[in-house]
Image 1 (tube, rainbow, N blue to C red):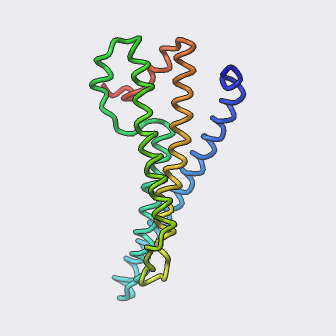
Image 2 (image 1 turned 90 degrees about the horizontal axis):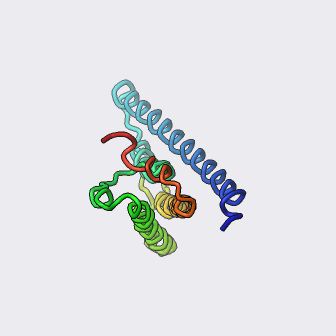
Image 3 (image 1 turned 30 degrees about the horizontal axis):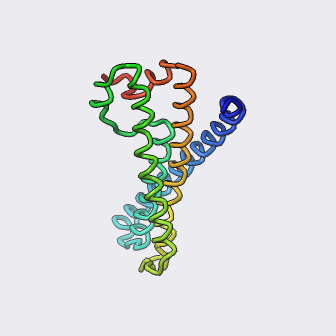
Length: 182
């Protein structure tokens, strides 16, 4: 565990930061494409008096990807919605252990989602979009990809918590939670 404390954890953090930057870039790029095709659709609808049928499908598909890739970014910083009512009732020394244990729940959930969706994607039930001729398997692939990356982030966060517990680093846990919105 001592080696994991230093060089191994640094490598995992660098990988996580790289994946996070990649997720931010993909989500940002997809949002930019959504904005452009929406503006194109408005122009074609009201100026040219024609409709871009494919724009609705592409916008919808990209929205799915943005949602799931955005979840990766939120998971990396552990900033998703949580209600710490019961955790805050636990006395301070034990609270750190509870905060670490609670993080296993989202980890189990994203593992379940990843496994279930991989089976679903490998299955035969996929449609072809009518306007673009696009196989919906590619849209559904956002779910297991994001779940796998989120599972990695959960592992890293739980490892960081365990290391902080071993060091007796209460500041590590005091920084977690509502980000100053009390």
